[in-house]
Image 1: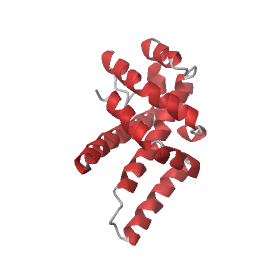
Image 2: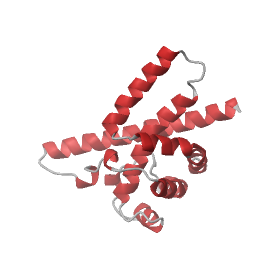
Image 3: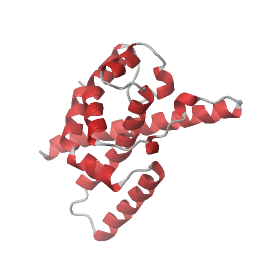
Image 4: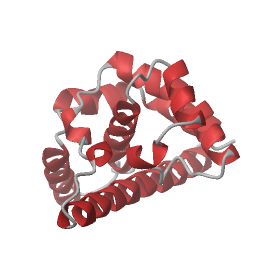
Length: 174
């Protein structure tokens, strides 16, 4: 059981790191384009502006595996692709077929979920840690959540759906 959880934790951390890298790349693109006097509207949306609901989370978890498989089939990576790179084509069609009329909303939900995943993994691994260590880690995540616009309700939503999230990630990685 512990070995299984560790494998899932590694998968989730890889996804989380990649999602953060995607967001960072999008921010760099937006900064570069703005410096050139251009606005990159596809990258202007922020994950903090999205409020996760059970409906959005369920739709995301249903969409993630086929989206990841399609991205892999066409040579992209779901972890590094940003809303600006979606453009049109097969990925947008797949998102629309799953009820995502706005592909940017899918990417914002993706970014917000993967902001929460490292916290989820850390909270699972906190058992046996000192109170000081738990507080230090909790404080670091609270600052991250504040910056990302993550609410307590969204954290609880991810906790309540962690098994579904793990299952979707496993399916996406097949």
